[in-house]
Image 1 (cartoon, one colour):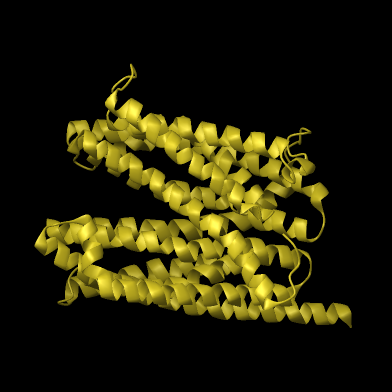
Image 2 (cartoon, rainbow, N blue to C red):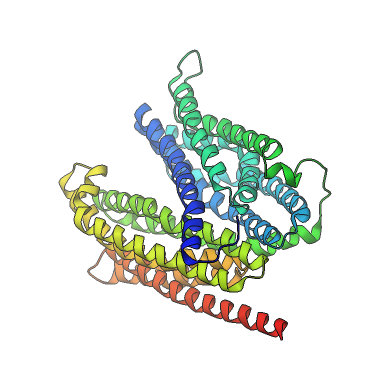
Length: 455
């Protein structure tokens, strides 16, 4: 990354960093998609087992890996402050934490997975597939969490195209191993949905090894000497990562788990309504990759500028990112409005489900507008290392306002299932306003601090 002067230069650098992040996020989104769909072509029960396993794993992984995202603003600020000699030590502490987190997840999973699955009244084969899929996945958890640290380091230097290439490389690897292990091709064992878990674990090991090779052999990463020396565990540096990372992790967990909670609450509705809800939610999650990618780009750029003590540049990047997100949300809203029936047709041909999905997609339009404000501001605040308010805003918007309001509107009004979406939209709007006010306060405080230093 380099210092930018004009808004045109900032826009160019933001897009340069943003585009690979977007492709990377879509690639990671696709990996889970291939696990589910390829298992579905094997058998419906294997599809159900993998889908249940994924629904249990994704909120846990996204929340805990969020802790490791603290490496991004830490490295970005060190790089901006030209303190590159401290980067390797911070990255190594992140790797230590990643291994510890993975081991804890595996240990807790071994204890509570059976009781959770037993309480879900699943068919025996579906339960076995879900259990064994997650058991197979556990063999790739240590490299997966480690990869998140290495990816954060690479991205923090602005080299997001590298992680894009690694992710795009991982997709065909995952698909090939899925094909070999799910269907038992070319002498490989026929494992069904369980094979998807084995394939994904193998993929996690490979992308981690590829990342280590690139970091050790390619500039500018090799200049930092990440693996050149052994670094002892540092409680102070680990504490810094946890202080920033735990609020990020909880914030992401609150966000991902709320949709799982709504899906469980909606089990009281008929099958057509549940299918429509899931279809519209899947497409809304796909569109969310846009503001999420902008958020991740802003963490890198704002962190870099704050590290270099260029508060005005950090401020300009923040609002530029929010502006782009709102513009894209407007375009997505128009697409949803005009082509909602065509989009619904991607998921179903049943006329009842298609009509309901199209109606849910209208509510997804308002999701986009709130996310366009909330997600980029979250990323900007992380660049400032200001994460506690983001955590509280997520708790407030989703669990204090969104879910209770949605439940009341779904159960005690004629809105039915749509009440949950209205509740979540209202919660998102409140969260967006809170984060907006926080960003304004953080930027004002940073400017005042600069003025005091200069005087």
